[in-house]
Length: 596
Image 1: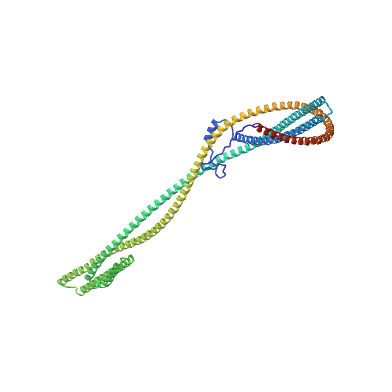
Image 2: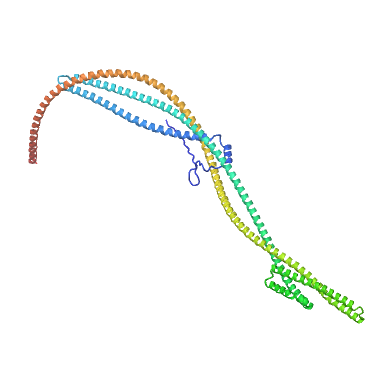
């Protein structure tokens, strides 16, 4: 007995046409929202039950195919055996019929060939032979029918036993399949739970990676801000250093201008000193070459570009010359005054009574001398003033030298600052390049991560849609499968109850058939005994008939020879009669012609 089964196979396909399978490298995050929706809208059935249902359906289909194949082979074998038994039985019956017919015909021939018997005896013998033939045919027909019924009962019994063994095998197979499917469902449930946990872990890892990506982006932005701040600070420092360099350059220009002004003033002072020294006389004439040498030096210095070292040496030499000239002038004036005083004292001591004119003259001379003395004193005062001015100039020159030193230091500082600026600019460029490379790499990584994130999101969306579709389809299939399972269970229960009733009825029938079979076996044994007796009597009669037939054949052969001789004579007579007939017909035709 076969019945239809519904087999459902669920497969997931990606957008590119590939079959979706469990991957070890990439597992998508779980989707709670569709699952919750489906869990709220679907009956309580787990994936284990779905898989179990699919396995049941597959096993039912496989079992049905196997049963169909077995039934086809059994039906083919049954048809072949039945055809062979029918042909053999039909051949046996035909042989018996032929033998009985031959026997009847032999008896009829024997009865007909007996010339000494009367017609009544012949009729009785014919009737007896026909009765015997009818009896034998009825006996054989009943025996054939009994044998056919026996074969049919045996066939039914074998079919019932085979169906019983098939049902037992099917029951054991179903139990084994049930146990195996339950184990597989447990394993699949464990795998499903592990996959869900892996998806959760991967979602957590994805969130952590997104957090790390955000941290890397924030860190990159912070580093970018810090580098930009450092660049701004370096630019401000560079501007400050540039301003300092410009200020130092301006101070240098100002000091150069002051030096030129001081040189001009020094030249004017030298000219004044030359004029004053020319008016002083011989004592001052000794210092003119020195002053001229100093002026030459000054011109040399002015020609040499106003170097601070040369200016300083020139100022020191000039100060020494002025100090020496001033000291010599003071000593000479003191000596002159002492000499004049001594001369006056000697004159007074020598001439105590000078005249008033001489005294007046002396007084006027003294006044003249005093005036002459006062004039160099004034000049000395002027020289002192000039010396103070020169000292102030020396101080200015020292200040200029100090400023020049500061200028050199500032230039060196500016040079070092420029070098540092260049170095900082080079470092800044290197840092900028490194930062740009780092930013490009980080941007590439960010783009790669964003692309991966987009792909993951697309895969998640696709999987979400596929899972929703799969869950909806599986939900519908599950409902239909549950209904089919219920119907199949009902059908199975009905079939089991019907099978039980059929088995009980078949067992009852089997018992009755066995009883009838025993009775038929007894009847068959009786029939076989009768058949053996009949066959023995038939063989005896056949021998007798054969002997009689042989005798009759010999007699018939003799009669046949006689008949052949008579037939040849009759043929000769017939030929002669035909000839006479032809002659008579020809004569008759001739006479008719004559009459006409």
